[in-house]
Length: 118
Length: 108
Image 1 (cartoon, rainbow over the protein chains, first blue to last red):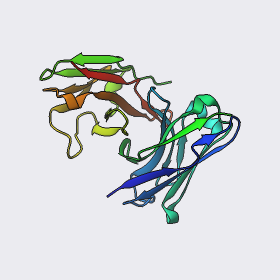
Image 2: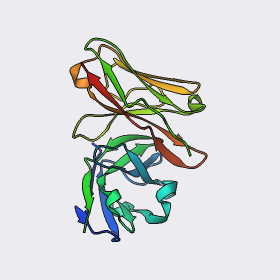
Image 3: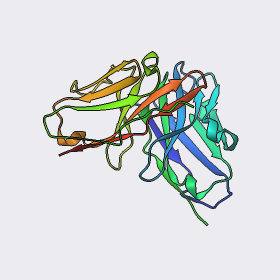
């Protein structure tokens, strides 16, 4: 059974850096064809893809946010980490960690709500 | 950049058919995936690769994709189908995953 669980702060201040950790089980981060994305959803708004890390360790980023994002993984710990710099109140959202099978998102974490406020 | 356009809302009576479109130039050349998000829950994959269903998804839900429009069809609509629905593609030219704007399905 594949599960993903997000962890990190619930509140960050403007200009701070957000670090989120995704702990996965039920598959290996080195499995060919599997990768992990971070996807966010501001309250009442649509889904927005942020970043993806493939089994090969290749990475992809949302072009509009690329300068602020870093995704990495520790296969031995079954963890994927996302950092987002210079947080703004507009970044308030639920952040989901999601396992992708090739190019579709098959397994979703429940998400973690991150609020940005001073 | 690639933009997937969906109607903001679709209303349908129980037992009828709901069709949700996802439009973009030549989307028919890409594999389209669809997600259902019920209120307060994480999204769930309901269709992948245009028309395949994951196990556990009823065959009342189907997908198609051709030309400039992909369509998610929900037949014999039930109250439990009330949710937001999102289309999604992998845009290989820019190595981006792209989501549609989302459609709220209301069961009358």
